[in-house]
Amino acid sequence: MPRYQNVSKSKAVRMGTNAPRRQRSKKDEQEFGLAKKKFIICPNCNCVFFDKAWHHSLEEDAKHLTDRKNIRFKICPACQMAKDRTFEGELVISLSKEKLAEKNEIINVVKNSDEQARAHDPLDRVLWMENESGKIRVLTSENQLAVRIGKKLESAFKGGTLEIKHSHEEDLIRVFWKY
Ligand SMILES: [Zn+2]
Image (tube, rainbow, N blue to C red; front, side, top):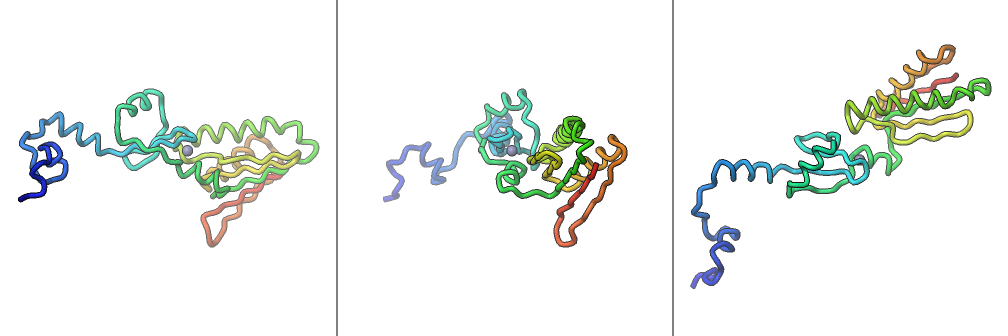
């Protein structure tokens, strides 16, 4: 006697012991296809992974996504880097006493660059900043961002010196701006 004799038909279908009779309609196919698509939301910064890349979570997208069943919550690579205190780019800003008054302006340039980078790619960002009187350390998820911010500072505030140091073994780039 077959083991699944008393199993309901729908269960048998689910278990693969019986084939579904109904042909899937085109709409079902589309929904089935969408249901298979995976969405990952970073609970920390709300960026969303789908179509093989991380995207910004716009409100409209988020609304759209709540209809989907295949949503997982997982921290994104950039938030993971910040959590682990790892980075690809480091910018060290050293300010002389006379230039301390310009510190807020300098920090604004860093913040604007961060926003521009995120707008372009949600994983390209300033991970964290360390700020002590004459020294500001800016850590970035992507090495070229540290270079871009350094160059922007150099052209915005005349009279500083910029030094870019590439690491031979790793992707890490360290940028030093003395002003
Ligand atoms: Zn994140």
